[in-house]
Image 1 (cartoon, rainbow, N blue to C red):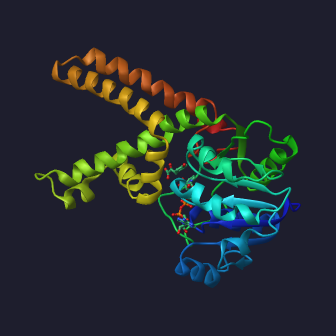
Image 2: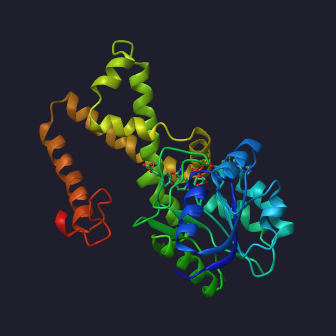
Image 3: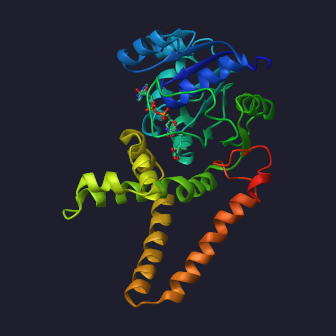
Length: 307
Ligand SMILES: NC(=O)C1=CN([C@@H]2O[C@H](COP(=O)(O)OP(=O)(O)OC[C@H]3O[C@@H](n4cnc5c(N)ncnc54)[C@H](O)[C@@H]3O)[C@@H](O)[C@H]2O)C=CC1
Ligand SMILES: O=C(O)C(=O)Cc1ccc(O)cc1
């Protein structure tokens, strides 16, 4: 695959940055990739495992001369990091990010983008419950969506180049505005994570069921909840504080529906429960029919076997 950017700087060397590095290296998509992490321990690990062509001890060193700067830090510190790199950004460079929330990140980072530098926020809808420099792998983004959220006035050529990088890492790319992104993600990712955290917390609090029983007898659904609830606490604290309005809107609707289901159970209203579960089952079937079942072995190749 042809090189897309000559010099790329990855800021924050965790799951997403390390996956991007391995994917870029595998595809020959970047000439030189520099990296910066806040802690000396992470930088040491990165050097040890060959993560980045050059691991830098300062943000300035990592960013100077970069054609693409990727902010891969928790969303709560995006603005602070952008303020620090501002003096080092070269004219014509592109700054992007991979944060799970977009409107708040744009509000934090936007003011620190100098004239002549492109700012194209992004979000790969791919991840795991693992974090840190050792957790990344080149295949993470394959056949998974990455959403780009270009701000008004962005040069189409700069967006096209970033799109080409993501596509070369195997991603499917779409564009969306920030507010809509945050509402979509509140319903598909942020609220579900909070529900998983809550359910695992409830199981942990329950005096009459031991933790051993929870672990031993957990069926698939609850196991998925425990996986999700093992996600990085800093990252998720920041996501909820940063996407406050959309998350609260979805949680408000969620609790209304939950109360309605609770009442149906108490009143023995089987028709209500059956009608509700029939409607939700159709959503899953829709995902499969649209070829969007990412667990299917042939996902990304049409999904024919699942129809
Ligand atoms: N984990 C996931 O599944 C996904 C995460 N994201 C987003 O990607 C971003 C990074 O997440 P991960 O790679 O999972 O996190 P991670 O926890 O694996 O890595 C984050 C890195 O940022 C560093 N960091 C924290 N504060 C910093 C600061 N002030 N200055 C410099 N470095 C700092 C940490 O030390 C760590 O190396 C987050 O904004 C998250 O919302 C997006 C898609 C999926
Ligand atoms: O591990 C999972 O199930 C995820 O949901 C991964 C994930 C976490 C955060 C994002 O913003 C995007 C994807």
